[in-house]
Image 1 (tube, rainbow, N blue to C red):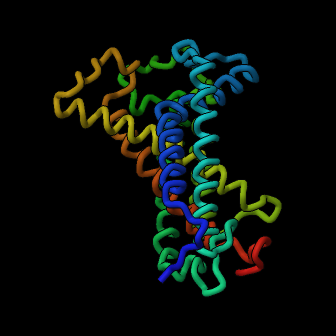
Image 2 (cartoon, helix red, strand yellow):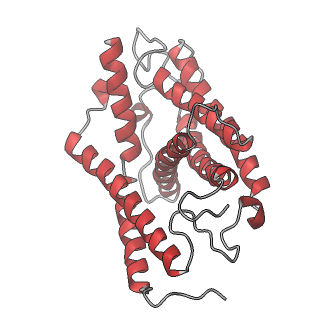
Length: 272
């Protein structure tokens, strides 16, 4: 039975998780689009091609507040987790304890599941990236209007090639997590941070889109008209949101498994 220290305050833990949930929940209402628009603006500055940016003007104040909320919510979650670990007599940094609690991934039976999740993540990322790449190369699969993105479309058009690269990064992360491998010159915190941001983006978009689709199916929302889809086929929207949700979840699970398998000896407590 786990014993708690006298300094443990359940209200502190509950308050910390509630604060983290509210902040991350607020950021999830649009932080994925905020980060994507920042990437698209960067590509636009480099290429001189505005692409779809004219249709997606960015509210810098609102976007900044959501990104700040994501950072603050993440910090609150980490602080709460470390407080609870200390109260349990475990290392605040890694969660290990001298009695063996908080051991490696295999001890919790996660290894096989997280590896499968990595491969699933790679497949889903490849499907999304491939769709965007073929649009950037002039393909029309998934489009009702061949000129949906304008007359002069290139792979470097913001919103096409850049998101295809994000899909490629998702493939690399999924395979790397599944095989417990990253190049030696890349510290492990980099793929884990990329997975965290990617999971937040994908899960938030997936939840919002899937929720709206379900609400429209139940008659709670009016489904979008054909003209509201910007020339993209309706089936793309119906399929892409569940894909985002599953992609984000599989990436998160794969990253957790990778974290446990590669964390090694803790610099703070020496366990491992």
